[in-house]
Image (cartoon, rainbow, N blue to C red; front, side, top):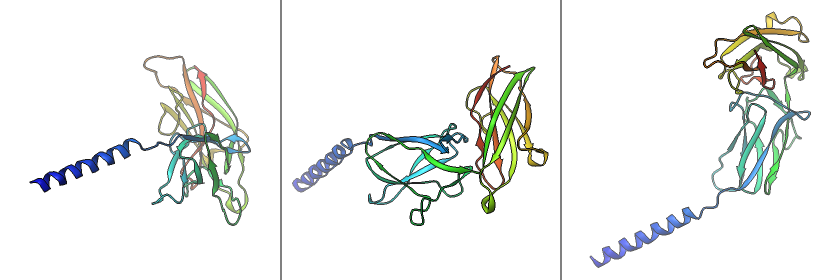
Length: 233
């Protein structure tokens, strides 16, 4: 019985030490934030659909830290200080990553030491230029130009252009109350694209909506988007 009591005491003491170690665990305190950009211009995407991954080698089993990108092209990650490798998962994003050199390829190396910002340059297949919106009579009309950025062997074609509206400023394929799609076959001039979408009855009533244009590239899952705009009806 005495031995059993001693073993139980040792076990409880060990559990207490483990609990203290867990309670004393230091959380990451440094924030790495920034934007996905082309020539310094943010790349709009669908909220929480595109992400980057941060890898910190040398700390046991490797596992990436995901940094989701918001619809304005911004990201933020809470990290420990140290050296990280920043990559995009294969096939994600409406853009091509930029090769750093033959050794690094498209990996971005960053040293985190306190809060800092980092803009990551990419090369989108297309950029939406001069998006313009007008509202009235129960609909929203839009016009835009498309600039092809990636040319040559890596070029891709436009699959469709879409106009989305929503009651809030979160606007995407998954979050909208109205959409119009324009297939590539019906786009005669990339410098002069116009389209409109009907706005359904809003409950409760409001005199405005938020609008956004998205472009789907052939063989690319993620769309590129224009900035969200508030449109009076």
